Amino acid sequence: MTTPWPPRRTAHRPLAPRVAAPREPVDPARIGRRVVRRRAKGMDAAAAAALEDARFDARQASQHEDLAADERRRAELAEWERIDQLLAAAAPGTVYDPDTDDVVQAELATEAAAAAEREAAVREAQRIAARADELQALRELGMLEQAEPREGDEAVREELTRRAGWYVQADVDAWLARALAAHRGHYADPAAREAAAGLLPQPVLAHAALLSALARLVPAAAPGELAVAARLAAADPEATAGLAALLTRAAEPGDPTGSRA
Image (cartoon, rainbow, N blue to C red; front, side, top):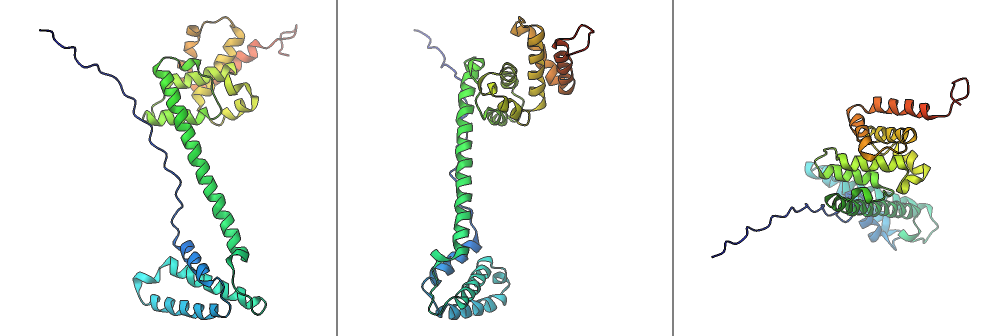
């Protein structure tokens, strides 16, 4: 009788949380204004009667504590008053049309812009999550160093750190520091390197600066010989940045008198 092998254990990465589709925020006042505009469309003198009805309802509601603070009711009354004033100032026989109401059109444009921003934010969150999944897979295969950094990977670093319970991900930080020092990927663009100063934490920036300075002084240094740079940057990023600046000055060509050019 043969003994079966125990079931193979495999590590499963937790799936990234799904990014929810954008939802339009609930705004009782906006709902109230929309209701009034639908009712008022095509009205002329009848708008004045509707305004009186709204005022009557408001007076009745004010007598009840649970209705007195009704935001939608107040917005409806204010909208009836605005429409009544709009028609009073218009030519005789003018009927109300939301499509020609400048206030309504401006409000719709603002809402459309806000909706577009929400959708863009969701798309960006989805992109970050997908890129984080990609980099995580490369980490598990030991191939992270082969990846070329892309625009937005600074935010992906934040996502990977968040998934790890906000513990520093040393391998990801080192990968970004080496890429920044070597001007790899999108860091070949000076603008991207300048932007990184405001997107990456100080230890990563100090690590990159020290690697860059050491590369000028010792171009043939092996990667293992430069591992100390990451430890220095993690322990004291400010001192590491100062050391990098000192080494950078030391690598600059000097004039015959010994001063730096």
